[in-house]
Image (tube, rainbow, N blue to C red; front, side, top):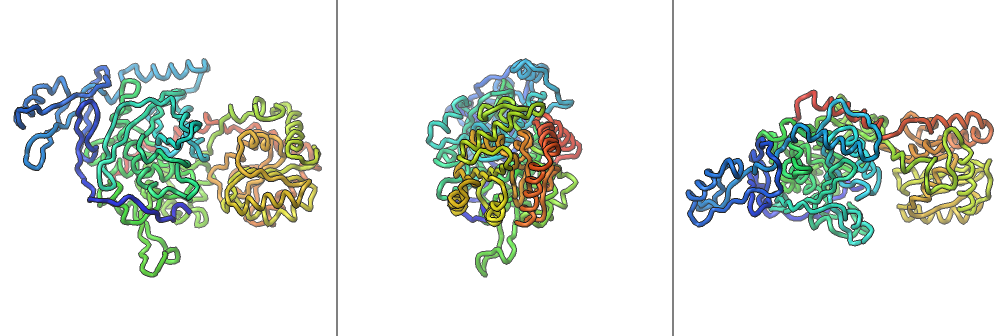
Length: 622
């Protein structure tokens, strides 16, 4: 499990400096940004890209200070001289006057009008609009490994269309392949560099930016994001410096609203940070520990969104000093493994848990479905955080993810054999026949066709499918699986296909067009997951008139419990019998699923309610 894996990290060479400063020289930020109150209210003059340039000249400390004082109104706000050990002035801490942190009165409405004009459709607007900053390890289409990328690639666009000003901050991954790197080709270098003090020294990051679909997509650039593999690891496993990489992301995300003049003005301090999973989990701590004590972000709020509680960002306790957090905040991150989970008798089990820190310090907590918000408060689903989450239940909310209704639409899907809708289901049978033909299965429209799409691992209940398959294959059914993961499970799929030649097909790997055809062509989608934060596949299935049979607390047509082979087989057999013998009832199940509202627009309204709740109470200050 990723959250329990101790990995080697970049060694810390010195203790964390609690009072770093910033200076503007040669039009870029070259000092570390830190714990002193560097940002004041800026003027509303038109924003310029160039920052104030300061040079001490050769006239000594007093002359340099005097020169800048004389130019205070023209150049910026003077916060004090920076001196070396001998007392000589080596630079000045300035706030340039040319980057206001609030828009002109009509600036926000201009952006909204532009959004409306993109597709010419009238869109509903939020009652209260906000500056929203998503912080995430992935955002489709730039980067994606699962549901996190889908959410952070879709929800920001919908919120922007509703009138909010939205920024998404994510790493600029470059893995050396043309196809992957091309996704970032529209992002331009903002020529803004900042230095972050963490991991024993200054770490310089840059920002790239693309304005698309009403959203400011901001990408943090650093060499640690440039390597083969996916955002988290490669064929050898998780990257050993992931804590370092995502610490940089969090610090940079906190700076971005203050220093990036996007669209002519910065987002400013009154932001709502959407903190997605442990990779962004330091953001609430940084707001509380690094900024608010100095009057910065005093009106900001943070909402942590838990997509998968199984991954928490747990590392050895000694790594706390690398995070750029004041030492008195260690308790927020402190984590102690139970005795049985320790590696040896002398192991104290002490660690830091970044997601735990986010849960402690955030203003609201969200999960990606209503059922998952309950599940994570149980011993079985809480992964050690269930008691903490139960204690914060008053601010815990579950909102079911939306789906991309353009990509996943059976009436226009380019990947399927025939189009259909809830009003005309005839094309559904044609999709089934085409899938059976493609897979080499006997073409039998009246034989229940069961599908599975997902990772081949323990979480997804693959072991139950393996245990139940011999009995299920005794029935008059067909079964198709699409997925990759555990090599032993992949080998089992190949063996099962050879054993049940006319009934079973296994597709090792993942293929987007094939996943669409399986979703459209199957009658039943099986999801025996031990836990499923949202389960987008079951939402896709319902939209395509395919009935999900799942182990889930969600409000779905067909669920089973407990999570055993026997209960799974009983649910499948009842579903198959209904399909075969009670056609009118089955058609009703299909239509009810297709008519449910799983759009992001519906989810966005619920998110806005959480935003309102977050701003009712004062922010977390420790």
